[in-house]
Length: 564
Ligand SMILES: *[C@@H]1O[C@H](CO)[C@@H](O)[C@H](O)[C@H]1NC(C)=O
Ligand SMILES: [Mn+2]
Image 1 (spheres, rainbow, N blue to C red):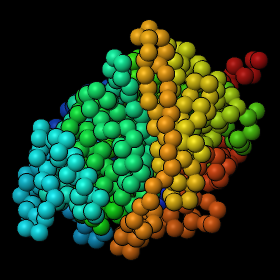
Image 2: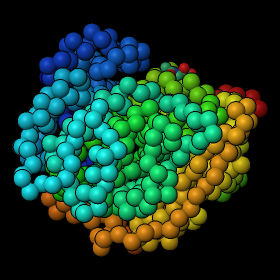
Image 3: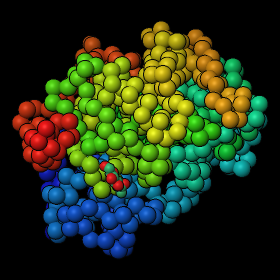
């Protein structure tokens, strides 16, 4: 079967199963053609796919196969089966620039995944050849990763405060260097607290640059003596996401061994298209730089382990396994999927994190235990980036969006810590009125964007982690602060570029905007819009699930249930 017809068929096969909310995005994701020239060589690396599982080799080297490529390679043996696998996993690797060129004849589409070393080298050559800034530019020039010093950071900050922008060429080169740096890191980084000092954990920043400057004035800038973990959601919502992310990245380059970054659910293509960052990059620079930021985000670690005792991640703990979604499930604490076997830290460490989660991946992550590593990986990424705690035991549905995102109860937190010898978990992802909150006895949330969206009325906080006794517990000191004034630019200002010039990227989303619901269900306000956007199972769908996977809604073997 020729590639093009496989692609057309793949799109058809995917379409009927998609929720309305994701239709537009799914077409963004699924119409991008796969690699052309290297499919053959990659076939060697991935083996032949015969409707079974992906061989483990597919995850061994970067770059190797794209899921989309596997779809094309396997076209002769059955597009349909493969197409459904594409949605289930997210998109893991290597769409090529050829895809972009083809699409841009009509409408701009983001590049979804996969820059290999040659792509990055080509981009670096292209960036190096970009125009020099005009003689009216008085700000700092990016000196290369090794040249980032305190004085560069200071000059960058003072220029940003004046409304200046790093030249386009410099911004490209800086992000390219960050990609190189992140690619050397592991999925779960490890952090030590310097003797007699502390580690600072900063939660969601969401483009609130002026509040970020305020934080730095309270903490001092990161250094070897003062390590930082930035716990994701640097961008989107706030209208200075470019300033925030370039400053965070510059800090990373200055102290790569002392500044640690976790991926949040807003370091993701899908959310960036909807919540301002893509529009902001397009307005302040260009869409090509947005593609490069997306690539940097796919390389971010998912979590960091402090002193082997405290796990810091953006959203939540791993969800149930098998991945059950209970028909009719609500937030009633008695209405829960009971605890299943706990994952280990090694399971998290082993995640091949380089992935773009597709809109349909959430619902399609539901299913039985599987030996398929890419399915496991995409489930884990969804949970770590999107999950939230709940009051009652077990797992429940998240208020954030539809099927496939879980809340987890105190019993889950306790069991996870116990299994992994952890003191506790630190996470972010939800607005807290004081900026921080112990949601469970071993789960501390920290949110650093005060007066979130200019309306939240919440304080912001960061955490200082100390280790008074090397054999004892980590201590937590939350520091709270209020919002500081900022120039008169509203949140989401730059989303206008997308709604005006790239409406195909968000068309379907607009239908969902209402006065009470966040347009996408990604409300960071704790528990807001309970059950909104609740993509509950239809009874017949549940029946099909049980039939196909031979488990009841709790994931118990149907035969076993019958016995009991
Ligand atoms: C995937 O997860 C299952 C548990 O559902 C586990 O038994 C299996 O070993 C994992 N496989 C891989 C390759 O990660
Ligand atoms: Mn978040």
